[in-house]
Length: 330
Length: 94
Image 1 (cartoon, chains in turn green, yellow):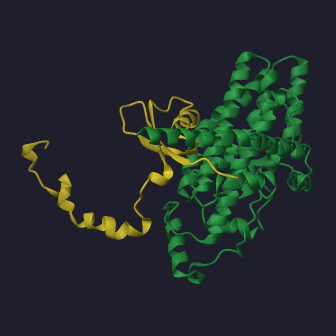
Image 2 (spheres, each protein chain N blue to C red; image 1 turned 180 degrees about the vertical axis):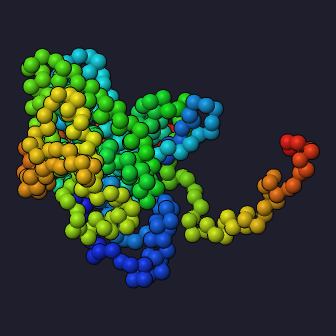
Image 3 (cartoon, each protein chain N blue to C red; image 1 turned 90 degrees about the horizontal axis):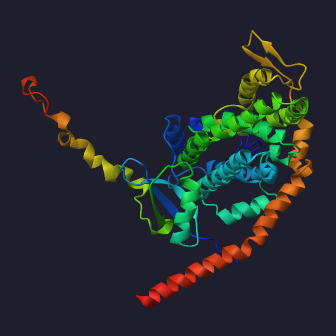
């Protein structure tokens, strides 16, 4: 989800026999459930893939602040405003945990920001959709954070120690996000006709983009197989998407809202819902940069980075001056 | 002119008289800001009563390659564990 299309340079999964002794020992550690730590030897592909995946995940947390930040000044009550502020602050924290995890692999924070700002690294396609009404704050918490949790819970067991530890912290905090979203949806769905309509409209717009968060079907992807062998991906995209629909459809029913998919129905035989695939052309188009808000999002990030430069420099200069003064006094 | 703020490792003491524990890291221009940032990043939900920060590059660490020679010698010294000694039942808890 937060890492939807992690391109890797791998050529498919090697068997243990095909690996050189160092690689084989590494794979056997992973198979045995060992955690890999920053100073351990690791194959280049593992390192590169993880930097891409954790980086994409971190960028998603940071860019993900923008659609919700949009409503902080317009929250309907002071309490809702405080809650939304706390939630957006959490997203910043999640981004920081993840950037730190990525940095242990040898990439710097500045490099990661630059790759986000110049479009070399991606963030989740979901954040390129606009948040048009207050009900969207409900839909984002309920659906977008719900999808995020679906993906992040298994990643707590991922093979790379710093990533797994960051995921544990994030998952602890994330369920507040989903619940506050569902709480907004309940209020709206049980409110006036106009509020109910707003809630339905938010669900209509966020349903398919939320399903896209899990990435395209990965049946034929060799990259996905390698990531799973390395335990940096724990489930296939399709497994997680199914799980998400199975969890969410009854919740929509509880709210008295209609999922915008006429084909959605319970399939007794498979013990899960049948549902329509999102429009993958739209997905690839949004990833490519043509979504409704791609330009706004990147411009906001670049502006923050550029306009913050003098602050970063001034604080460092101030710290150096203080250090020098302290040394002189000793 | 890109100069990054140094990286700090953050250690936090939880509520219950425990020792400080490593919780993660962050960038900050100096120790004072590192502590303030650590408060915001790592204790938003009352996770601690005390924070230590130390510049990451000041930490010396054992290398993973030394694992064998470093820790194996302890394996053969089972008598360091109380369970090595059989104490008769009639003596009771010891």
